[in-house]
Image (cartoon, rainbow, N blue to C red; front, side, top):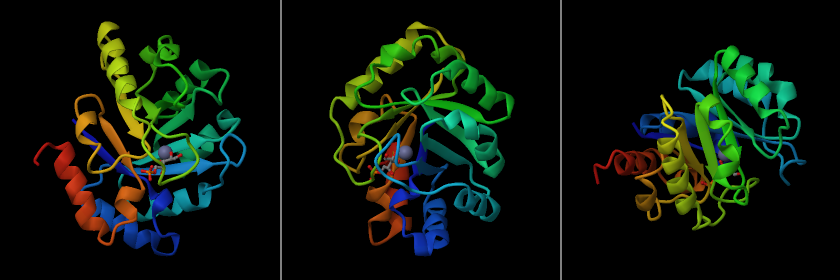
Length: 221
Ligand code: DX5
Ligand code: ZN
């Protein structure tokens, strides 16, 4: 299965409900929500109040990507706010195993994300415990950046590593940053969850663009 997770960081926050509805009608499987703290990444985005409102309004699973220092302090709150997937950064959390286990105990899916400079081999010991690995294909912090080309090879290596380790079920591979309708093709063999921000929300027709991405990942075009 392949999944599409539009990232609302690039949505129009004054029309958030409409933008999300269009993405859902266009075929979004999850809504990706980027939480930034101005410390782990050089930007601020949104937090609990908006996540709670989205969760109240829509039943679609929320894929919450925490780009914050001390993320472990807020795990309960994010799950309570409505996160179905909760992703911590490898670079931001010291006791990853403890907190991955905590996320799962609280009933959510646990993700671990790595920055572009972090080798996938650093994940070897945590892989058996996670539901998903998020490979950042830009430096986290902003929407609309250029895709880092070596991310393709990273996804390939991760898929190979998961295969070699015979993990069952295998963790899903998510990729986030700079994905568009041109470069997505080469990712289709390795990536399970596609996060798309500006290439969906900065287009004139969010519904139609989401549909195009969905058709691509389902290999209907
Ligand atoms: C960046 C965020 C992304 C961002 C992706 O730090 O994690 O989710 O919204 O946006 P695009 O698709 O525009 O690169
Ligand atoms: Zn993200």
